[in-house]
Image (tube, rainbow, N blue to C red):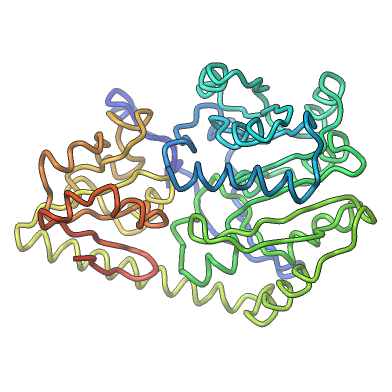
Amino acid sequence: MALANKFLTKAELEAGEPAYPLRLAHCNECGHVQLPDRVPPAAMFEDYLYMSSLSETLVNHLHGLAAAVVDWAKLAPNALVLDIGCNDCTLLEGFRAQKMNVLGMDPAVNLAPVAKKKGIEVVNDFFGLASARRLRERFGPAKAITATNVFPHIPALDDFVAGLDVMLDTDGVFVVEAHYLLDLLDQAAFDTIYHEHVSYWSLDAMQKLFNPRGFEVVDCRRLPIHHGQLRAFIQRKGVRPVSAAVTAQLAQEREYGVPGREPLDKLAAQAHQVRQQLRSTLDELKGKGMKVAGYGAPAKGSTLLTFAGVNSGDLEWIADRSPLKQGRYTPDSHIPVVPAERILEEQPDYLLVLAWNFVDEIVRQQAEYRSRGGKFILPVPEVKILQ
C-alpha cells in the first residue's frame, strides 16, 4: 500500500508512488500489537497534510484536554508544557489559554508557518534522547509533556522513553492520547491500520513499556473521540499512587481477551466482511446509475479504499475541508479531492463517509445536502446507509 497521507499532485500521478507491505502483527511474548514492516519516519511526517484545527469536534476536545491536564497535575501559571507532534498547535493554544508556557515539537516543516502565525515556538525535529537533551539545555525541564495521536507513530520506543527521562521534570507528567486497541477491536476499525501507526496500544502493553524504564501509568480514561481513545497519565515511579482506574481498565482488557490473539483473528474476519459489503454496495449503486462521491479524506480512508479496491470508477471525487489536500489525489486509488462546496453544487445521490469517526459533525455540516435527499454510506464497523 502507498503511504496513507501522501496525497498526490497531478504531476506526481505520472511518476508512480512507492508502496510498502502493510501487515498487523501480535507479539507472542508481550502481546503488543504492531506493524512489523517499518517505513522511515521522514517519508511520512516531514510534509504532513493533516491539520487538527479543521475539525470543530477535535478543537473542542483538545482545548478540553489542556484544561484537564492543568487541573490533574495542578500546574502553576507559566509552567512549561511541551507538545510532541504539535501539528498546527491547536492543543498548545488551549494550554496558552490556561496561562501555560508552551513549546511545540514536530518534524512537519510545512506546518511551521502555521505555528509562527500563532506566536508559538515549534522545534522542527523528531523527539528522542538527542533532541530532548537539546531541548532541556535550551528551555529547561517540562512540567507536562503531551502526545496526542502521536504515540502510535513512534518506532524507536526505547529512545523515546529515554528522551522523556531527560526532558520531563522530576514530578512532571507525560500525557498520552492514542487510539485504543479495545475500541479498534470493538468497532472493527481496521482502516485505522496504516504505516504511520506503528503501534496499537493496550494499557497492558503501555505498562510493559514504561515499568522497566522507571515510569508507570498512574491514571487513565477511556474517551469517545475519533473511534475511541485511551488517555494515560504517566509519571516516574513513586510520584503518586496508581489509581483504581488503571486496575479496572486492565481487568477489562483481560476480560476482552487482550493481550491474547483471538480478538485480532475476529478483526481480520470483520475486515474481509466490510470489504465484501462495500464492494457489493458500490457496484449495486453504480448499476442503478447513482452518482456516488466521498466525504472526508483522512489517512484511514486510504486503507479502506485500497483494501476494498475502490477507485475513481467508484467515487467521482472526495470532498474535504483541508486546503492542503484539495486539488490532490488519494494514494493508490487516485480519486480527486475537492472542496466541500462541491457537494451542494453537484448533489451526488450518496456520500461515502470515510471520516466516519466524525459522522455526527459531518451530518450536521451537511444538513442541506441531506434535506435535498442526499444519503450517507457508513463503511465501518459494517456498511449501512443513513437516509
